[in-house]
Image (cartoon, rainbow, N blue to C red; front, side):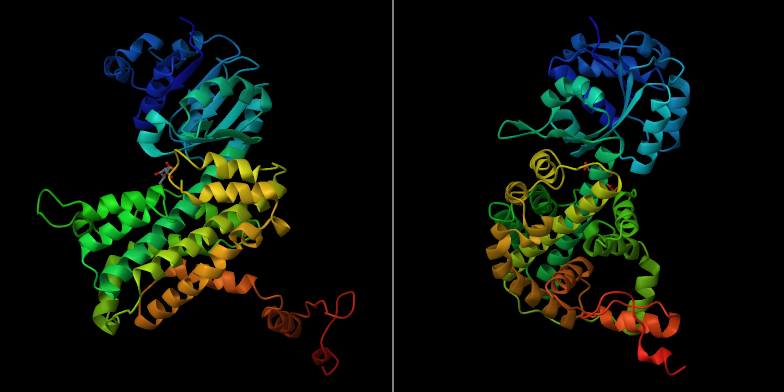
Length: 467
Ligand code: 6PG
């Protein structure tokens, strides 16, 4: 047997991808840092092991691959990836491709692609979404790298990808860090969506005193309608689950302190660097950061009180509010993609990105079908919010979002992502905003100058004449 691709790193995600490939009849060679994991993996893999050869170390794995090689590393995309490249560059040949299928900072991916290019080798940043289940049975994959690498990887990635009505959810999105960047923004959108769902759950349970089983039923109904999405679906599962140890609802025994590995924060940092501001994602990152400060929150509640007012909202209003906010979250995410595409000359294909997010990934939702169609039609200024297809949805749903944000704010509920969504929408629908005040202030204290509505060039205010 001749392996078509080598996989190094048999942790949860590496094993799942390897089994997925073997199941699709792809011949693979595998190795792991600690060699003991290899026979254990082959045992677990049988009967798929007929498509897998195990190797003792990375040198043996590389030896087993035909040239030009495809070597996928499923190891942490931080320092271990650089150490891995230090080890393998001398063992590889010009034309070979190394693939990083982890959640990498795309700046690192760009630097690694440059490093390998000096040896006439390719480095691919492959964003893989869908968690362990996705990796095993069909992830959504966002590929960044050379066309030569894509041509060789396509026959391997397409069979293992999730499918939306037969269309494989994988695409070559651009050079070097494009795939990892799109995956990062995917995660940013994921953060915002998760936060908004958490905010809505809080309004339902505590604001409207809806019993937990009813909240779960509501999410069940929502996942059959316009809000259909993976995250809404798993929220229903979460809300229904009971803790085997105490019999309590699981959601009530989980500590309210969220973890984060960094991709949401990277999205926000990059957005700001690119002159954008993804405030809904920022709201979600902030929500997680504040959640980690439990002792401070407990002290503040004791000091200033944590009372909140009952809310008079209907489930339909919350459904519409979440629908509007979801669209705004995607819209913010795609704006970051636009900005990066221009900065790094990637020409990111927005319709295709929406398409490959329709199955397999964490942010998959019914709305992505309409989003890809809207981008294919070319909305004014490239903006999702201006797409004629979304006009009726926004006209109908924004008043509900406004009602939710007003009531929740007046009632004392923290809704960082929902409130950011509405404020962003309200900012963007004013042809004349508030920045004349900012420009005037800047000129008064720093002589920064401003543009005028009625004349060309840079101008200063009369305050300078008087000094
Ligand atoms: C996915 C997920 C996956 C992972 C994130 C979660 O698309 O499959 O986004 O990549 O679950 O790393 O990140 P946090 O730990 O930061 O929530």
